[in-house]
Length: 320
Image (cartoon, rainbow, N blue to C red):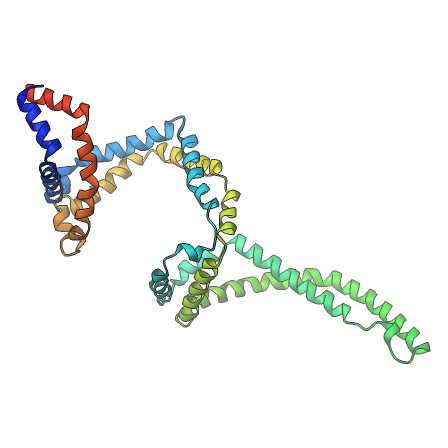
């Protein structure tokens, strides 16, 4: 190795401050450059489209994805306790406050979420079953003739009366079912309209907020084992297959290139001439995260300059 290359390599390896200064210089450079100077707009759009297609065509992508998902979910199987044990106690108050914020959903949006053939089918089955069950219970409430006071003629008369009533009730039940079906069908529209009106009304907002908090507490009280067991109902292989099918569908979309280019163009139009430093100015994020970013870069950079590959590269650079 030439003397100049050896001297540079020694200073980078033995004087950490020199490498730290280089990292600081690199971070400053990135912060001060407009987005358009850091990334070429056309290249970025083409790279995204090409990356989507290449990923969709990769033979082992779904297998790889299923294995990664399984690894991530398997960690949940090893945990115990409740979900609340995994949440910082200090987070609970702000989380509840956020959920208690008044929220009044748009009426048409609420209808779009609630009024579907599948929703009506579920409500129809529940209402019909309960109304028919109510009719059966009413028939069962008729007294047992053997338990009537008086016995003798009264008891025999009550037995005959009960038999007649039972026959009539059975026939009425047969006639009742289609009437119940018709009644429920008429009531479904009213029920759905009432549900939409209720959920989207201003007066329901406090109850809706309390409902969200109740759901939070109910979920936090759930054992992790119970929640983890649910994940087995959607096997990672199926998830990977579904995501793979979606990715292939996007990759086959004729409008992919055009749409990606439009989104990238919108991004560059809004922020292309703005540097990261200017964009983040006033947020406090640079001061808060810069030490962490530089710290994360520092050790990998030191490992790099200690490597033989870097020494060879530096030697070639100096020789040229």
